Every structure is written in C-alpha cells, then in structure tokens.
Length: 460
Ligand SMILES: Cc1ncc(COP(=O)(O)O)c(C=O)c1O
Image (cartoon, rainbow, N blue to C red):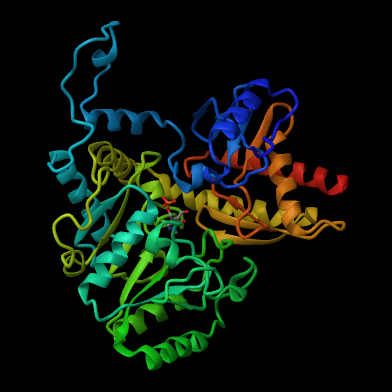
C-alpha cells in the first residue's frame, strides 16, 4: 500500500484517506499533495469533514462552471427528470413513483430529443457553429474524442493518418490516449503524427500575439502532406493546451490550421472538452478563436457535474458509423440530458458570461501580482482558465514548489484555504474557479493566495 497522506488534526479526513488508499488503486486519482476530503460543497466552496472552508480554484476539473449545487440549476434538473419533493417525502420507502426513467438504453426519450435540439440550436447560434449538425453523445471526454475519431476514420478507411498537436491532452483511453502527448511517449499508434503547437510564443500573458508567424507551422503541415498525401484524414487539437500546461495560442495559429485543413480536405476536430461552456469567455472556444470546426468535442462543464460529453459535427461524418458503432450503456442517458438542459438554461438566461468577463480582469491583475512573491514566474490564460507557473526558489525545483503551494493553500489560514489541482506539466497550477464567483470572493481569495505565497517564500 502506498503511504497515505495524513494531516494533523484531521481525524475524519485521515480515516477516509486511509480507507481509499487501502481499498482503491492509487492509479485512480492523479497525485495531489493535499488529498482533500470534501464533506459538502456550495457555490465556490468545498467544506472538509472538519468544517474547514476551501475556495474551489479547480471547479472539479473545469466541470462545475456554475458552482456546486446551484439551487436554480438543481430545480431545473429535477423538473426535467420529473422529480417532485412529494416523491421522496412522507417517509414512504416502498413502491415506485412516476418520473423520467434513469436509463433508456435501446429506446428513446422526449428528453433526449429536447436536449439534442437545444444543444444544436445553442451551438449553431454561436459564430463558428454551422457545422454542428448531429450529436454523438458519450459519457466522458475521452469517449467523445474516441467517437469523433472513429467517425473520421470510417468516412474513408484508406485515409488512416491522424494529425494531433503535440503535448495536447485528450484523455487516456483508446484513440484519445493515442492523440495525447507526443511521439516520445511509449507505445505510439503509428497512425498518429504530431505537429507543433506554439508554446514559447504564448508562455506568459505579457507577450503579444501581434508578430506571431504562422509560416513554420504551416511548413510542417505541408511536409506531412508531401510525405503522406491523401492518407491524412483528420487533425485534432485543443483550442489551448490545457493539461499540457495552459498554453493559449494566438488565434492566427488555429485559423491557419483550419485554412490548411480546408485546402487539403482534412477534417478539423476541436477538442473543447475543458474549454466549452464559457471558460474562454465565450460560450464555445471556436467563437473565441474565430474558427468553424467540422467536429467539436464537448464535456466537463456540459453537465455541470453530471457525467456527459458529446462529439458534435457534420452529419456526413457522424453518419459514416453504422447502427451500434457509437453506442454504449450510458451515452444519451436521461440524467445526462436533463443536466445538459439545465446547464443550457442557466447559460442562456443568466449573466454568467458577463460575470466571466469581469472576473477575467480581476484574476489577470491578481495573478500577475503573484509574480512579486517570487513563487510564480509566469501567468497564462484567458476567460476564467489560467495556469500559473512556479519558479525555482531557494534550491527547490519548480515542480517541488508547485507541490508546496498546493499543500500550503490547502492548509490555508484561520479555517479557510484554497483547493488547487495537482500540477499540470509538473510546475503549472490551474486556476479555474466557478464562473459564478462574486467579485468580492475573487478579491478575497486572491488576497489569501498572495499572502500564503508570501509566507511560503519567506519560509524557504
Ligand atoms: C481537452 C480535454 N479533452 C479530453 C479530456 C478527457 O476527458 P475525460 O477525463 O472526461 O475522459 C480532457 C480531460 O481533462 C481534456 O482536458
């Protein structure tokens, strides 16, 4: 058994850590030095069993864009499912009540039809959503990516080559794993060829996109075309490298990829699994970057916490798969459809995107200030998704500093801390609180972060 992380004074949390460390393989979760235990959550806060309050700087992993347990979202979700308070009130524990089924495998529900229509209408009313003609539901982001790639490969089986942007993250399973990372990772799928993604050009918010030169990136694509000709089937990229360390490219890069794909009859897949539903400041990242993907992959924030994802795109591509080739137990299940509808309702009726714009300004100013502590060397991001890169400090490598920051923020001060994810790419900490955060909480949490970083810097 791996030694479980234990913190003094956290008996209940420690007991949970101990059980899970013993009864589940460590592989199930990514390493985060806090191993926070959540007893309950509301809005932008998690509460530990000991009653400590943690600002959630991760939103799950960019899932709870609307915060945790939002009341109106929950009311809408329950209403789509047909759940009423009297169904579970009154102490009756036997029998059944009439509501939408939790599973409709090999059948259809009106809820699913409503969810498809509403999602397509929302996508198609966004600039760049014109090619969103059919929805291939899935349960996780990697499955949506897998289904998107299956659709492309089935379109023409003589065209077997997939281009993917290097150091992207599309998931761990199947073809999603195959297009993740780079050619130096082990067991590469020979059909996948990696292309460069501009990282140096956008490794800090202080850099300008103005003199970005697309020509070396286009030359790389042309060389691959020379080598593989019409075998090149599709190109998959994230709008920005998320898991790879939060690198947000100049729009000209993605626009060049699209131009090249169109000129060479290559399908463009945009994996927005973490960027969708407002994270970039726009409802969809394709709007932000001024492109029109053939397939867009959605996930995470799509259900605000209920597992659901989708590949949405051209009907001719989706139609290349036959009966059953994209089916599984959970895809399009009613619970997922109700969650998507409730989430769409919130985005369409509330001012969450306006709030995101306001929060963006506060976070840019606040995070740039963190550099003065000496702990943070670079800040990257857009909308409400940021990466702060740790520096090497006092003989400690930046990767170790990132671990110390997560721990320090977890422990916080006076019963209040900050929940951070384990580092991306070793030394980058993700900052992506729910976009429903108030400006007051934004300032208060940034002030707390700054003083914790200052304290850490003096202790090193
Ligand atoms: C861009 C992107 N694509 C795909 C995935 C995989 O999603 P899941 O973990 O739901 O399979 C992720 C997860 O972080 C992601 O960020």
